[in-house]
Length: 187
Image (cartoon, rainbow, N blue to C red; front, side, top):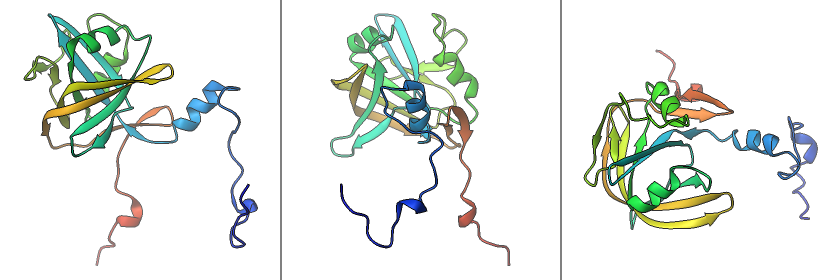
């Protein structure tokens, strides 16, 4: 174990709310991971007339050159086979006004697209109305990620819109606000 520099002591750290080993308490580990705020996206795909849509907060940019993104899906997800067969999918980055859309696509139900406002993308993957961004992707790789598969997609087309993001942190939905330290006092 490396010694801490003299200017840093362990007593300067506040006591943790909870701590431990991930395998000993999976729920506590999940709460720890929830300390990292993420955006909320709905991944959609279409194959031979069948539609799939799931909510994820694992979406991330991977590379600008080539243009790659990644996200993860549970191996047990009923939507996984359709995402793999489709070979293409869309990332729908949700706006703060789309809490109901997130809840709709987070539910395990067959009629997720009934009454949903969407249009087919270039290759048929649903593009949901009201989003902050759409990324139409080709499945590049599916990599082992334990109980999930890591999906790498090559972005073939994108669109960006005005709005505020829907966030997820500490087990709850949230919205972004400018940090108070960035506020300029009125003169």
